[in-house]
Amino acid sequence: MHLQSEFLLGGQRSGKSRCGESRAAGWLAQPGHRAVLLATALGGDEEMRARIHRHQRDRAERVPAMALDEVPRDLAGAIHRHSAPDCLVLVDCLTLWLTQWLMPIEGAPVDGATWLAVLADLDAALQAAPGPVVLVSNEIGLGLSPMSREARRYVDELGRLHQQVAARCPSVTLMVAGLEMPVKRVVQR
Image (tube, rainbow, N blue to C red; front, top):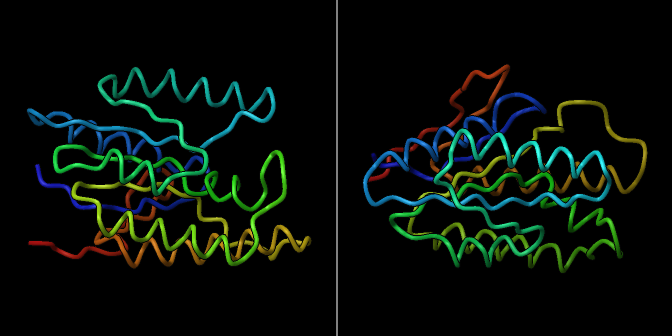
């Protein structure tokens, strides 16, 4: 099974994480293939810790052979470390990764120049990846403009991040109610 890098985008509970897990399970069904999940969430409160635990338990049942690396910030470095022709890298999710940079639980958000450097590092990692990378993210830019300056910056930067990742990935899929809606398909040879 040849799998290209793919960007899975959708609303909350749209089925995007499950779709990413399905891509990993299909990849792992081939002899000699490996998969690793780069999980970006941090458990900042009890509800989030319970949510992370539930996701870990459910994922272990659905895709037991997939390795896990918790990567709240150094996503580019983790992609460089794990990507190989025989290894699918599943990133879940870009939305929470961006949160660690722009709205961290502790400390100040990064400035614009630092964020641009982080984005450039991610783009370079995706371009250099010798194996497939499947990236999951929430589409939150379809609603009203947020009231606070910080939230508006977050929505704007998430939109820019999505555009950059969509431009880099040959395949982009919008998830709606558990259904895959192909947005972009470029056949690589």
